[in-house]
Length: 102
Image 1 (cartoon, rainbow, N blue to C red):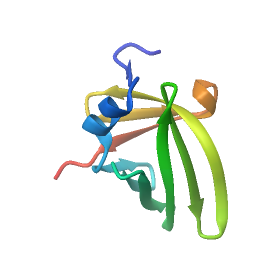
Image 2: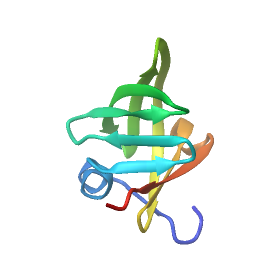
Image 3: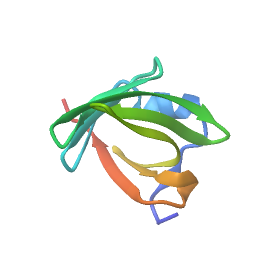
Protein backbone atom coordinates (compact mmCIF):
# COMPACT_ATOMS: atom_id res chain seq x y z
CA UNK A 1 0.00 0.00 0.00
CA UNK A 2 1.36 3.41 -0.98
CA UNK A 3 1.97 6.11 1.61
CA UNK A 4 -1.15 8.02 2.47
CA UNK A 5 -3.61 5.36 1.28
CA UNK A 6 -5.69 3.63 3.96
CA UNK A 7 -7.52 0.40 3.24
CA UNK A 8 -11.26 0.32 3.89
CA UNK A 9 -11.98 -2.89 5.80
CA UNK A 10 -15.71 -2.80 6.52
CA UNK A 11 -18.98 -2.20 4.71
CA UNK A 12 -19.99 0.39 7.32
CA UNK A 13 -16.78 2.38 6.80
CA UNK A 14 -17.20 2.21 3.02
CA UNK A 15 -20.81 3.41 3.18
CA UNK A 16 -19.90 6.23 5.56
CA UNK A 17 -17.18 7.56 3.25
CA UNK A 18 -18.17 6.78 -0.36
CA UNK A 19 -21.76 5.55 -0.70
CA UNK A 20 -24.45 7.76 -2.23
CA UNK A 21 -21.86 10.25 -3.52
CA UNK A 22 -20.99 10.96 -7.14
CA UNK A 23 -17.52 9.60 -7.93
CA UNK A 24 -15.51 11.00 -10.83
CA UNK A 25 -12.61 9.54 -12.79
CA UNK A 26 -11.17 9.76 -16.26
CA UNK A 27 -14.25 9.63 -18.53
CA UNK A 28 -16.12 8.05 -15.61
CA UNK A 29 -18.99 9.25 -13.40
CA UNK A 30 -20.85 6.89 -11.08
CA UNK A 31 -22.58 6.39 -7.75
CA UNK A 32 -22.33 3.40 -5.45
CA UNK A 33 -25.65 3.48 -3.63
CA UNK A 34 -25.98 2.30 -0.03
CA UNK A 35 -28.98 0.24 -1.23
CA UNK A 36 -26.56 -2.10 -3.05
CA UNK A 37 -26.95 -0.65 -6.55
CA UNK A 38 -24.34 0.96 -8.81
CA UNK A 39 -25.26 3.42 -11.56
CA UNK A 40 -23.17 5.62 -13.81
CA UNK A 41 -21.51 6.31 -17.11
CA UNK A 42 -18.17 5.26 -18.56
CA UNK A 43 -17.01 6.51 -21.92
CA UNK A 44 -20.42 8.06 -22.47
CA UNK A 45 -22.22 4.73 -22.02
CA UNK A 46 -24.54 3.98 -19.11
CA UNK A 47 -23.75 1.11 -16.78
CA UNK A 48 -25.51 -0.43 -13.81
CA UNK A 49 -25.00 -3.19 -11.35
CA UNK A 50 -24.97 -4.28 -7.75
CA UNK A 51 -22.45 -4.61 -4.96
CA UNK A 52 -21.94 -6.23 -1.57
CA UNK A 53 -19.13 -6.44 0.99
CA UNK A 54 -17.48 -9.79 1.78
CA UNK A 55 -14.33 -10.73 3.70
CA UNK A 56 -12.89 -7.20 3.47
CA UNK A 57 -13.53 -6.86 -0.26
CA UNK A 58 -15.91 -4.70 -2.28
CA UNK A 59 -17.67 -7.16 -4.58
CA UNK A 60 -19.39 -5.77 -7.65
CA UNK A 61 -21.14 -7.04 -10.74
CA UNK A 62 -21.89 -4.52 -13.49
CA UNK A 63 -23.24 -4.44 -17.03
CA UNK A 64 -22.85 -1.83 -19.72
CA UNK A 65 -25.37 -1.96 -22.52
CA UNK A 66 -25.71 -5.65 -23.29
CA UNK A 67 -22.21 -6.49 -22.05
CA UNK A 68 -21.94 -8.23 -18.68
CA UNK A 69 -18.65 -7.16 -17.11
CA UNK A 70 -18.89 -9.90 -14.51
CA UNK A 71 -18.14 -10.09 -10.82
CA UNK A 72 -14.98 -8.64 -9.35
CA UNK A 73 -13.75 -8.46 -5.75
CA UNK A 74 -11.77 -5.28 -5.16
CA UNK A 75 -9.53 -3.77 -2.49
CA UNK A 76 -10.78 -0.28 -1.62
CA UNK A 77 -8.45 2.39 -0.25
CA UNK A 78 -8.94 6.05 0.54
CA UNK A 79 -6.83 9.17 0.70
CA UNK A 80 -8.92 12.23 1.55
CA UNK A 81 -11.75 12.48 -1.01
CA UNK A 82 -10.03 9.96 -3.31
CA UNK A 83 -10.87 6.28 -3.60
CA UNK A 84 -8.51 3.76 -5.16
CA UNK A 85 -9.94 0.41 -6.16
CA UNK A 86 -7.73 -2.49 -7.16
CA UNK A 87 -9.35 -5.29 -9.10
CA UNK A 88 -8.90 -9.04 -8.68
CA UNK A 89 -8.65 -8.99 -4.88
CA UNK A 90 -5.87 -6.41 -4.98
CA UNK A 91 -3.82 -8.22 -7.63
CA UNK A 92 -5.15 -6.44 -10.74
CA UNK A 93 -5.20 -2.94 -12.16
CA UNK A 94 -5.94 0.03 -9.92
CA UNK A 95 -8.04 3.09 -10.67
CA UNK A 96 -8.55 6.29 -8.68
CA UNK A 97 -11.75 8.33 -8.46
CA UNK A 98 -12.65 11.36 -6.40
CA UNK A 99 -15.86 12.42 -4.66
CA UNK A 100 -17.49 15.20 -6.69
CA UNK A 101 -17.56 18.51 -4.88
CA UNK A 102 -20.99 20.09 -4.79
